[in-house]
Image (cartoon, rainbow, N blue to C red; front, side, top):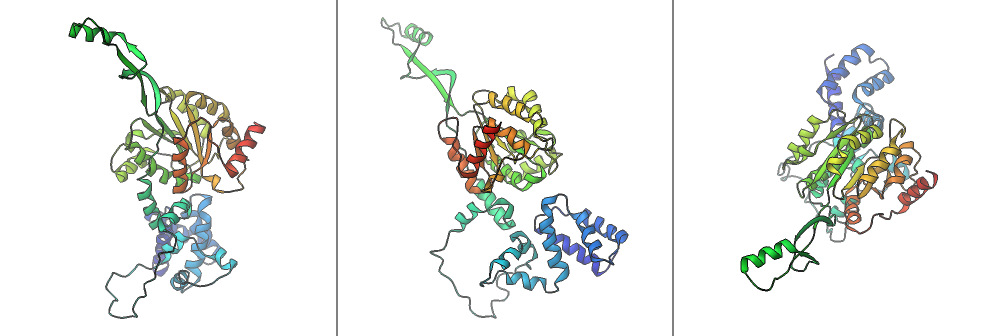
Length: 406
């Protein structure tokens, strides 16, 4: 297939890729071959043929549907999309029909180089934005799923500056301390032999304090793809800021990516992670992955009062089979177990899935993780004392229901 239709299919694939869908040249070639077989006589056949080739999971369908109808139906597509950015008063129906920010950004024409049209056109009016909301504050409250590509780049720079201030814990090791409560008899006798003094000055020591190990289990299934990519930037910053940080990702299998995240360059580190992980954006088998972690890795990384972060939406393909037992074993092996769930961004969240009901009774904290502000709240929760972290709103109700009916 050649001509204008092939070029339009290629341009449509670029729009989808700009909006965040993984559409590469291979899928464009597959789409052209599929159209030769299915034909283009009926619009429905054309619509579903491209959908079958370009889409990988159900969450991408709404974005594809809006992009298809805007691209293939309206000949003045760019003018209509640009009109969305003009200041105007519109009702509720117009807000519901507006395309997502990523789609609008992908359909916008490229900006002209600075200085190209400075000679013509009216003089620009500068607005005083002293009393407007800070872009940084707005970005912190924005959901990762609704961010444009430019906002995602800004969010990654902000995430690189975040840290987790986990408090120090006492260890069994003793170190020299002039104000310690324990007397070090060996050090005291050695000091007296060196000086030959008649009086022995008692040397003292006390227990040392150290940051506990941080173990992260991150879900990279299809429903968590966009969030997990942002979390990996966060975990890269933490790994290069402190020692004893261990990161595992899981979809249908468990993969240890700790060594890859230790690279200083975040782009190189994530490229190595992408090469090491074989089940990205696939299904989710939380129980199987936790069983492998408990058997192979728990004794290696969960010593010395480790803190575990579980990042997942709790949607398990195995319907929570054996998940409760594995969560109970994981909980007994660590000092604190914190569950980060992006679904908590919804006020009406309820623990209906079997995987969520099996996991909730075994966690110490159940917190949302869908934007930068939620990661800041996580840092505050981990820096506070106590084992049980109070949760609010939908998280508190969900946790209470799960424990009542478990």
